[in-house]
Image 1 (cartoon, rainbow, N blue to C red):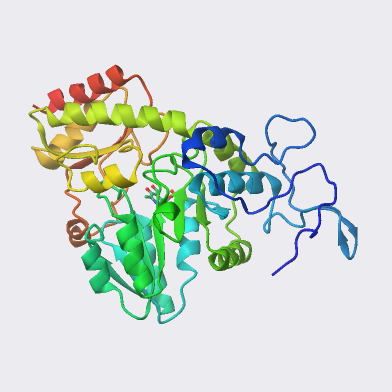
Image 2 (tube, rainbow, N blue to C red; image 1 turned 90 degrees about the vertical axis):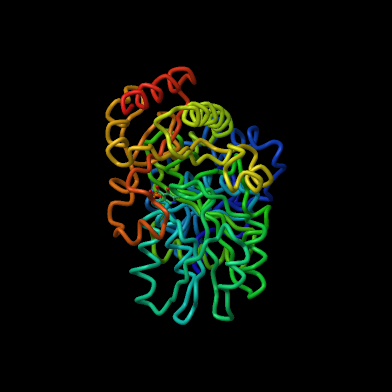
Length: 407
Ligand SMILES: Cc1ncc(COP(=O)(O)O)c(C=O)c1O
């Protein structure tokens, strides 16, 4: 492993910590820590600046001049964000990547030929593609199961299973996976349990505290929260996994740049405040959907009728900002509904302050075959809403406008 930093404190005014090493912290103080954690700031600057350095000066050919050597290996703005992510996830280490997919790829790159993966049957489309098209080429086999049923996971794992990979809540159907039960099933065969925590964010759910080994975020979503940067992270408390992830990060090189690191770190300061509002607005939108005649089915973990409601109430601090639903008239109604919206924007992605709507079969999951859509439970008329932090009454009125348009 490269020794890109001096081993001792050299008195440099930039504080230590790289790759987000931290002792974690009390979940009750997440909102305070989101504002104050990290901070590799020089002199008396209030916030960490964008350190736009590719490389760092040596003192001599045998001695670094400070903590850093080359920014693919470690860099101050990224290191600051990594400290914050590790802190919020209750992790000891976190690594920031160029996108959520690069972070997920870093998790899969821990696998070797002959390894077997048990993964959820409902996954983000590109995650599914990596497991269907890329990793099998390197000798990795995959079994997709309904991971909302821990017994199905227990039945699917075998001696060669090296990774159990789930999302919860899932994209786009908001299915809820019992993280502790799935982690137990993985650990029975010494497999790594990894959770894509993007839909919840560490403000609502901390997979490592529930027994998972790795927590993955698309930083593009709630952590950044402003739809203006792409990024991803992997957090862990396992020293061995941390070393392997660190090596993946600097060898594969899909690191998060200083500008994006700055934006996500800035966004993370308001994570809890935004999440509180996302959850409140989403609950109001879900109520409006449930009570409208044009709506057939609503998928929102906060509803008593949702099959994952009890597990969500147990493992999440709140039910999140995502709502999905099917209209009685299927895909034609879905098209009419989104066209009638005025406040909510038609766009992919989620977790930003602005409300977004999409039709997964036509947009995020457009590359899925009809069979794959069916297997993932995605109806062609399914609508997914990322409920933003606009005024609740404005959002409910807009959703009602869309629904009234299809009646
Ligand atoms: C659940 C989930 N995981 C991972 C990703 C990929 O993240 P990124 O777009 O930052 O690569 C997404 C993107 O929408 C997602 O929804």
